[in-house]
Image (cartoon, rainbow, N blue to C red; front, side):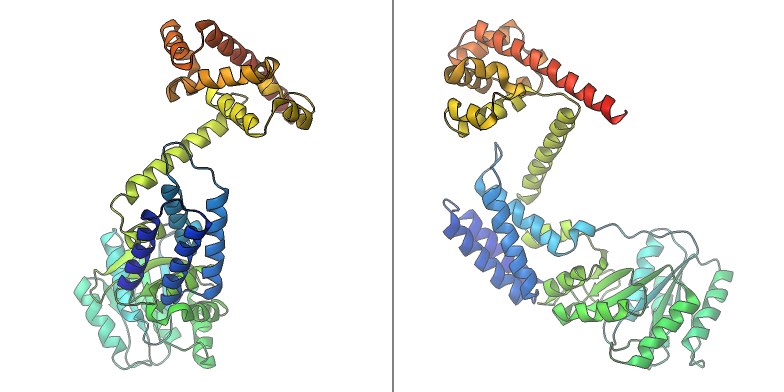
Length: 434
């Protein structure tokens, strides 16, 4: 994944070195991103969809106070890359009621047997009693390999090298391991190709007999966007629950593999990042993208945006409850100023809006005076007007070039406006039957 990481870092470098981030600069950044993703074998359609989303979001979004255009573009890049890798549907891997049966499927050479052991080790370290069942009756040495791995990590094991019926092995294995107190059963099935009809049918038979709680598809990152066809082929035979993407450590096509899996609707549960049994981790697209971008200040930037989003949610909640802050009033007044002369605004509205009626009565100069007063307030005062005492009024008036009387008039109008909002909210609740 190093090539993908270095490519994305070059995109971020272009963002940081940008001057005005106009259409020309943003298009240049998008072209660089496209080159990086296509090199990582991400599907062309997905790349161009992502490009259009980034441009649309960037040019339609207002820059929040305290943030730069660069900050906003980096956040949008981060969000869209997370979405590309299935971030919208990402949930931690959890087990249901015990006993819990997990069936691993995949094509030959995907690293399925090693993944079975890695998963067993991961679950054992999380407090579960785990057993491995060797149901691969085709690959020479599959039984011995899984047995050695089970011994190495200290979990129960069942297999029968004399039996060639995988369904029978699985049924017997579950009985034997249940007797040993095993809670989680991991079944390693034979690797097969999506075009091998008889072997794909065998997957269905094992599923029908075993009725596993989860079917996990193991795919090889070096296959890039080709893993989508594998996921679809297996999904047609069994209810695919999750996916493990292996060999991400050295694959230049890892981005393609992850995005291809996400595009099928399947959830990536784990990733394999090396050959050792510890090179295995739960997949979190948010952390994964943050690691790829590798910006030391990215975490701080994301925290700032998270705080902003929480703040906006709280304001939306208050507005829905019939409450409004001075910050809301300020933004309404600024929006009115953007529309042009007051006379034209009134024509468009068919009369002044209730929420800012008091501010409109005095005309254009009154709006300017109110905005000046509000600009002189701190964010805390805008959000909690009740803290504004005589001393604060004096400071606000001095800073805005107005009088204390002007500040008091604004606060009185604001109080009246809040009463109207509460009445509207209560009326709405009565109508809705609350």
